Image 1 (cartoon, one colour):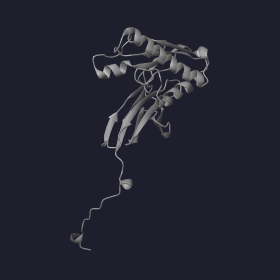
Image 2 (cartoon, rainbow, N blue to C red; image 1 turned 90 degrees about the horizontal axis):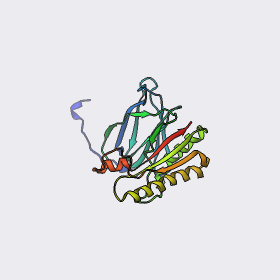
Image 3 (tube, rainbow, N blue to C red; image 1 turned 45 degrees about the horizontal axis):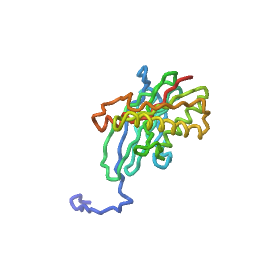
Image 4 (cartoon, helix red, strand yellow; image 1 turned 30 degrees about the vertical axis):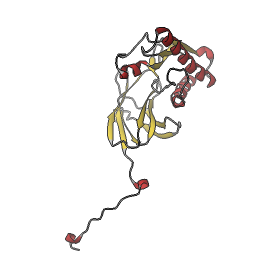
Length: 227
């Protein structure tokens, strides 16, 4: 056959057959204290429905992991390993997202007295202490951690940005910490193992002069006080 006689045709694929744009998240999972690589379980979940989408593992020698997130969903990407506190982060991938790669290194905190971590995927209604349903994936991981370590006693710390009065922020942070504590108790954790304290705006971890800084300061912390 004479190759010069080939004709090229262009056809339009129906939407359901077109490949979805994706976001690739990759990085290294390591021990926050020693920087040694960790072979961790990396879960991909739909943060809205709680659906488990995939189970992955980071390389035990290098700690490297790579996950692919198709566009059009909101995800929780979490990493966990025995003896360490889990880490999770949310990724909102709109349907019209173009292909991109995100570097997201993860440092896991060892489980020991004094360990304090931010629960990244805890969300409240604005100005209120009502937990949003998208918080349940994260809360259930914290509950499972407590059930797996039945001598652990924790404090849930509530924190706000500096918008509003000191008194209002202190009250709101206490109510939010109480809401998280109550969720854990209803999930089967003994009352004497979960304490709650609101700190208001007194312990910022970022600059309150920027929107990004304010968002970081509005947080829920999990601290191991006995173990």
